[in-house]
Image (cartoon, rainbow, N blue to C red):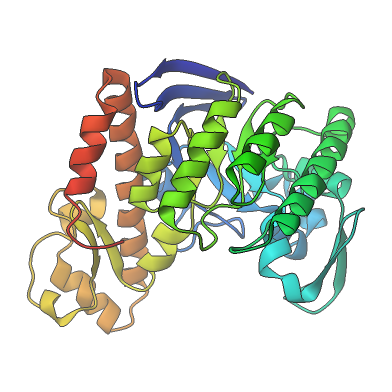
Length: 369
């Protein structure tokens, strides 16, 4: 993997190109989430049509189902799910937080009780690398320790040190037996000095790219933005930066302004399945009775396949009738919205007018996200 930094806007927003063996990814880019080897309700062709260049899958969930043997027999994750572009796989670090009640953390790794069948499983920094090698991931994440918000300074220091030790082990093991590009993950909680230290120490390990973890876990948005500024100042300019699990439209734009190149988030697809539609003026709930006779497109400013063929009234009808086509069309549109937003951001960065474009775009949102 190689990262090409093409230009940088005065705000710090970056225009780049991530070169992988499965094609180049123009950055900044949004990655749809395909946790279980599928972006829910979408075919791989659908996902590519929305403008997605790269997707994310979750190694923890794929380890549980269908398991390494099945995916290996298929020839790797790309062949198994029919996606020919690059794939980034998370390691299971998020589950250290989300499954806190059914896991045990120690120096060597973490033991999980499966949320599927209750069986016990052991994850170590080395084992996680080995499984992602079986998957054939293009970008690989090491096992890390993630905390929620708020937490104590002692907890933040402990999680950071744990993550750094595991990162060193993962890097050593990956050098011997791994494939794909291994990114380091910057933790450090919500203290600016600790975040800066975590970024410096992670960068000192000389990873080909850097993920920023432990944000968007309940903290105020302005705090996340301040911490992104801190991390941006410490990471090497010639390596890609990936903000983990962040991807509402406003957060995407604010992250780009702070030098982030890659984003992922389940929000656009998750809320689509409940009838939430992204528009240039904000988010609407298509289930509302106000749209019963609304013959406008879901987003009048969008030219995606859904908005050129579908009305708000029809989409509302699909949800009211509990037809599976409703969530499918809503998902397609929301991903197309994110793809277009990232594409327009790239143009604005390249033209050196990102601040003006972002201000105008955010100012048009009349409903909350």
